[in-house]
Image 1 (cartoon, rainbow, N blue to C red):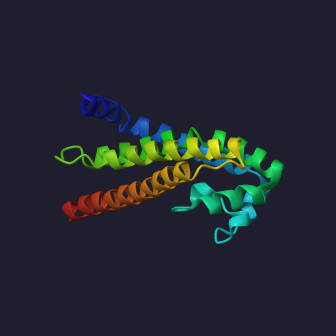
Image 2 (cartoon, rainbow, N blue to C red):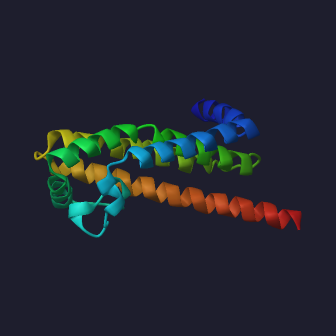
Length: 179
């Protein structure tokens, strides 16, 4: 029942106008997030806790979260919170765009690779919720919550990678079939 519902939504979104709308939304959200992100984020060295953005890491520990949020200071945490709240729309758009492209490529397949993209978005939302929670509850960061958040982050990135591999393999398959 749920798969049929998802397939109906993706059938609509995978039409040319749906993909164009999703691409425009994706570009717009990226522009807005880049334009309104704290200036300090553009100078970030992901190898240092003092300047890391947790969303971009593949995984992290409780100490890393505390060190990172502490390094932001009160003003930086306030900016990061606003940025994190803006980031709540991003997973919906990128996961639907990726899922729609995968649905279009694998429409007649017995596999459902579009689910990888949707799972990426789901785990991104879990990650975002925890990162907002960590920011609001700083300095009281619960280790089990960090473990769950880090696991969600790792799954998000894993599903994004799998989605892109599926996307590339679908495009390669189409190219081979045309030759």
